[in-house]
Length: 280
Image (tube, rainbow, N blue to C red):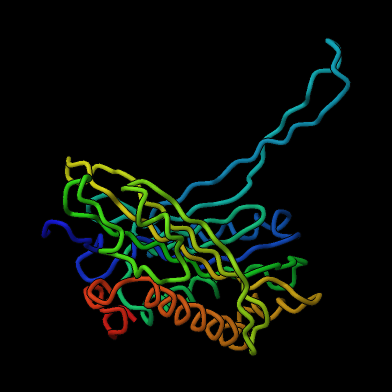
């Protein structure tokens, strides 16, 4: 890596993790047992798995004769696939209020979305006919860039456009440690209001034994229920559900690329082939 420049954490792109997630306001907790068989159904793709436990505490009048009552129950499940170096490659996590699919070995959007659709279909087939009440669906990207020079030579303008509306000006005069967290709504004709949350952090981390400045761009789009029942279609396991999920996910993916394009300087954008098919 060259001095005094930012490099993506990966060779061809900066994506550390992509997360496809669903939020639920009720019903998922009571139906988690239906999802436990995913451990065997998806074992070829996720050889490792374990149950998540929750602890319930019953508060009673605090006297020596009536202590607090505690009990544990299955509160979720994690399915995991590891790379040859023992780092995570894929993860599915189910909690009482959410279902998320994490890709930590991003290749191409088309390939990743195809896999996600297979996993989501399996999950929602098991919830068909239940009273789960979905409240939102989202897509999150975590991108990471490493500054290759000395910390004293750090310059945020080697990564970000100074005139970008997505970043405060203090980022360019605060040295190598700062953060900028913001959120807003996008009004999209097909989908209504989409919440956009962008968190940018510049921190110091050890990279190959060397203290480096690292910039993490954590961005999520979330479409939440705007009318009663208007998210129900998004958890159907059949073709109609897959089509509406894929359309929303595609919009979020494309809009994320547009945001990054307006945030990063041209040389960095070209470095990660932001508009090339290899990472599209």
